[in-house]
Image 1 (cartoon, rainbow, N blue to C red):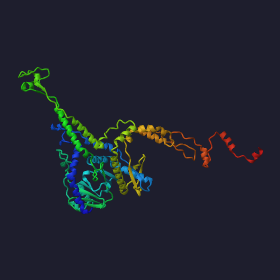
Image 2: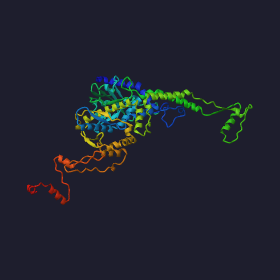
Image 3: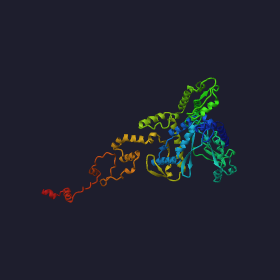
Image 4: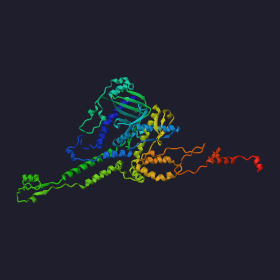
Length: 565
């Protein structure tokens, strides 16, 4: 893309978003917040608002996605793509996992998955945190990020545009530090852009609350084809900043493909019409229920209205006189009010809509708390497999995005990390120092550590440990000390129960034999081992008299003694 094409491209994306996606996104957000009818934010509904009711399946589906798809502790493992020392590869893996923890990647991934369910896509951005000397990942406001719509794959996207709103003071600070060109001093701050806000139809306007200071909107353009990053302001053709693009910092997460481009397809948009129709049916049933309150009518030509009013307000047990006319008795003057009957088809329609929502969105089937009653690993595995039969593809997409983030973090660590870090290796409890110089010539690809509820359920882990206990105890190739440590950890027992480790005592010159399991090892013939190694075995400790006899017997026989004998 040419430099002169950036500003028109930015303007086209902004105008297209204002006229199409913004209206749809605001509607979906209102559904998520449960604002199907009311535009009030007071403590309770008015009398007219009591005539409507709703069920918020949008919120339930979104929250179910977060609890089902997002791993509790995202981690990756590094695999070598070329010749590299094992410690350097493990060190790179440790630095990446440290960066994920430093970024609170779980929380950022929750925001990205929530955007993907609500709006069709979530955007993650990986940058360098110079203050902490580590990579940092953040979930972007997907409303403010635009990209090439001619690509069906995220790897084919040719450019990215992000609208970043910064304060006027921060903008002037960038000019002072030399990041932006001096001519930018003529740019003045303005109000917060309305198109980046949320129009929820509420009576309370938050736009004024955002204008507590002046804001400036800077558009960051990442041109993948030209390897160029440019910062622009829509009022000027000249860029504020222009530099070489080293890597693409963005990763797009879509749970459903829209068959058109990389914007994805929202689960909530697919069921929003059914959700709205279901709420209308429930409101109609509510109105029928309100009209079904028992009432009594009377013949106004046979009874005096004043007498009926007095009788209605009289206390229980009192005697009230009522005048009748026309010779009709009181029993013939009162009538039961007709009761409306809801059509049976309404309940069938409501049930059909709920089934349709569950069919379209696999997330509606993955109800939270469904695996609480599982007592064995087999039961939990069956339930988990049933829930994930339609969610596995979405889980794979989340893992792919996590892998992309890990690769971006590894690139930034190799290029910009300057200080030594203390990291924990995956599968090891001890932390070790890693220096950036060890990352030279390291080529690695990453895989996500699979997440399963069975791995985080302590009751299931205890069941598995009990089942494998006999095998571990009787296997001579299993370290008994490590088995004991794992047992104490799984059953949440204090590690102080372990005895201090003592080095085994053996013969001088012979290294001690390590323990290899709970079963006792066969006795070792130390003398034969020493003789095979050419080492004289030590003399056994005997009383002095027995030692003298043993020495005399071991002494060589002289020729005189042989002749005498």
